[in-house]
Image (tube, rainbow, N blue to C red; front, side):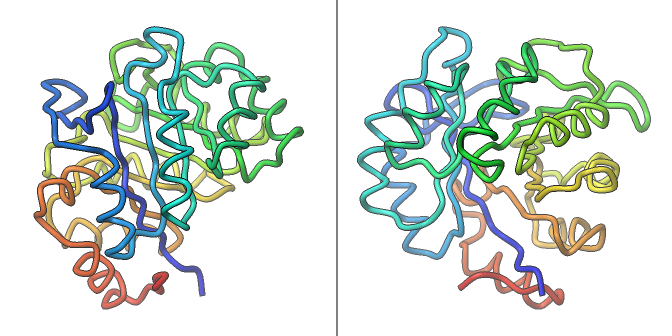
Amino acid sequence: MNKVRLVGRLDIKGPNLIKGVRFEGLRVMGDPEKFAMKYYEEGIDEITYIDTVASLYGRNNLLEYVKKIGKKVFIPLTVGGGIRSINDAELFLNSGADKVALNTAAIESPKIINQIAKRFGSQSVSIMIDAKKKSENNWEAYTLQGREKTDKDVIEWVKESVGQGAGEIILTSVDKDGTLKGFDTNLISRVSEVCRVPLIAGGGFGKLEDLREVLQISKKINISVGTAIHKKIFSIKEIKSFIKKNGCEVRN
């Protein structure tokens, strides 16, 4: 049976873990290393680090952090933000990251997905899709933390990304992110219908029943959590226990 992965998302700006609502009103939550270690000790399955200003300034400042944390936590680490070339990807993959997550660079030049996948394997390439609703059953992919329109339809972009060799899709509803008001289940459902690789869905988790709604779409969908665990609304143990009670396997 497929095991649902619980992925902790840490958005980082400078030395701080930050979090906002719909990618706005960002507030400092604390030391990202302490949060990462806490989640690791509590049983999180994976951790995703996003340098929230990297694409804006054309650089990723997480390299030393990844080197350090990679020696302390023994679960898959994904790093995103400002990764624009094969050399960037290689640098992080050789420094402790298991996967690199692309957004802006992939939107601007989709062939970079294929280039990295051919060099390091599809399992090393995740595509971050920050989706904003345009109309019923219609979402647009955004870059720069939900600030920049791309004119790319989310469903078509999922297909194209996977076709280029992406091994995983990290889907976030910008409209729901940080609100604690539930997932955009329609978005998740539509994406899961066309996504032929593992899907991580996030944005809006605020109560345990929200998880049931996603798992009813597909028990193969993995869950990304941020605000709900940063603010200690739920523990990793509580979330995993609920997932198990709803007929899904989880990693210990």
